Amino acid sequence: MSAAKLSPTRIGPYEVVGELGTGGFSRVYRVVREGGSGFRKELALKILAPGIEPTQDMVMMMADEARIARHLHHRNIVAVHEFGEQGGAYWLLLDLVDGLDLRTFLGEQRRRKGWIPLPVAVEVVHKVLHALHYAHGRRDESGRKLGIVHRDMTPGNVLLSRGGLVAITDFGLARIRLKIAETEVGITRGTSSYMSPEQAQGRPIDARSDQFSVGIMLYLLLTGALPFPGKDDIKVMKSIVRGKYPSISEAGVPPSLADVVYQLMAPLAADRFPDALAAADALSRAVPPEWRRDADRTLGRLVTRIVDDG
Ligand code: ADP
Ligand code: MG
Image 1: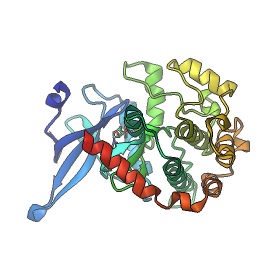
Image 2: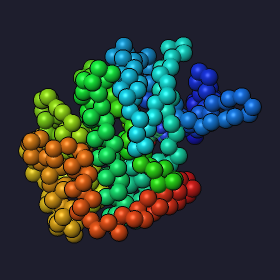
Image 3: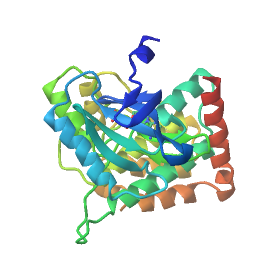
Image 4: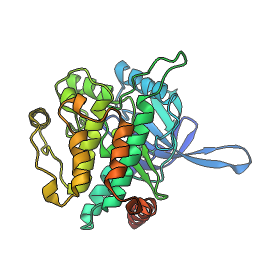
């Protein structure tokens, strides 16, 4: 593949051994760091805007992501180890999640004429909500709330490992995304399909905006379709603001689960859950506990199958 040929073999002190993914503004590589006595550790390295000169804004936002990550130590959040620069290239060094992202997972499952088992869907979203609740509540050294809102809670930012781990990533880049969209430097824009109505309208947002995005994700996992589909960002945002979408009860989703989706996706933030933890609790009450017992293992098995099939 020509893309592989163009891939660097070294970034800073790291040896590049593969490509993991591409987002709107970055490419993520699998890299190796060599330590003493033959110690080799595999990590992920996210390089900013490969192939173009990053703008000052983009660099500042990546630095922001690193700054935010300093406060995030949670098993369901991808750890950031370093914000580096060499010869005009900027990168974040991250823990490697050996698997794939939820977006790729769903695409692959659909290609295999499958989807995501309901207990696995619930388990994944439950973990995402826990991670978000932790991030939302973080405070700085003086005890002031940091006001972290992910702003881009989409399946591409939920990583799944062969071992059944679920970890969210890509904190702090959402604002870059909006800036770039405005200045139109010709890079693919992030999808608008997961925006809350307040976000779509450019109104002030708080942590409850992430709940709406998670609601859309859960809707997709449960029904196989987006509530506000479409390729035209403006049209999608308008339909989010209008707030009309097909009822999920018709998709055979248990009413208890449907209620959680509806509350996450309440048009007014005040009608959502008080926080992401309350949403997570409601979600676990909505299904019998034994449903979720093997969900991690099932997830790991499905991820492994997809990754190994290539
Ligand atoms: P962007 O801000 O450009 O969207 P992301 O951080 O979301 O960048 O990364 C883009 C993709 O790269 C992800 O959807 C995922 O497939 C892959 N990826 C990112 N971080 C990791 C990681 N730590 N381990 C494994 N894969 C990753
Ligand atoms: Mg992303």
